[in-house]
Length: 192
Ligand code: GRF
Image 1: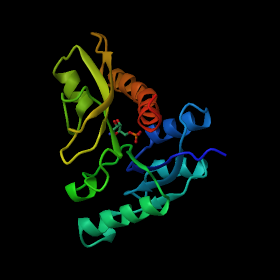
Image 2: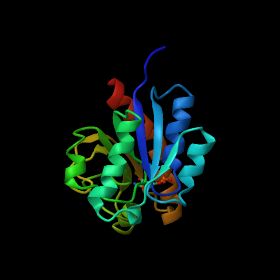
Image 3: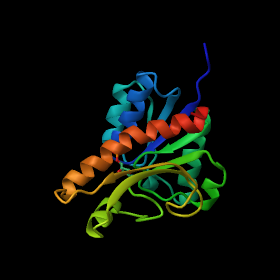
Image 4: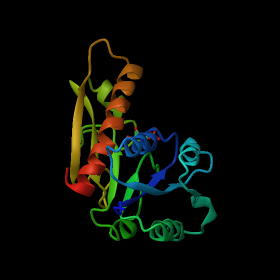
């Protein structure tokens, strides 16, 4: 059997992007396996999604470690244990240190709900809405030492209609995320 590349997916919350990755793998549209779902939040619903898909869920919480470096070492150990070749951040709400990121050049992906470089950081959808931008969007990028700054892999936009509310816009952006992230991972792993 063909050996598929292994992903380690890092989460903190609901995990709808994780779900979309799992679904695309099941549908044969993304050729990879999720070796582990690593959560820094023991209550993340993403862990339930992992369990349902028979993927090992691992809880690594910052509060369990004296330093950020020990916390990141635990993540690093888990990534190595499952032989993951790609780290996929899917709603992981922590900023990884430069030391960690530099161990994985072009091997950490992040999804951000804006057309980067516009609106980096938190509340990106709200920022686009409040700025009355013509478009909102989604960016998948490699993670470098900055925040939401690394090389862009894929980006796509949605029109902000005059009838949109923050809720409808958020729905549109999330729907786009769920299509774009598996596509970007497939592209990085297989070049298409
Ligand atoms: C997404 O909007 C993603 O762009 C951002 O965090 C959110 C995670 O949502 N980085 P989910 O946990 O995948 O549902």
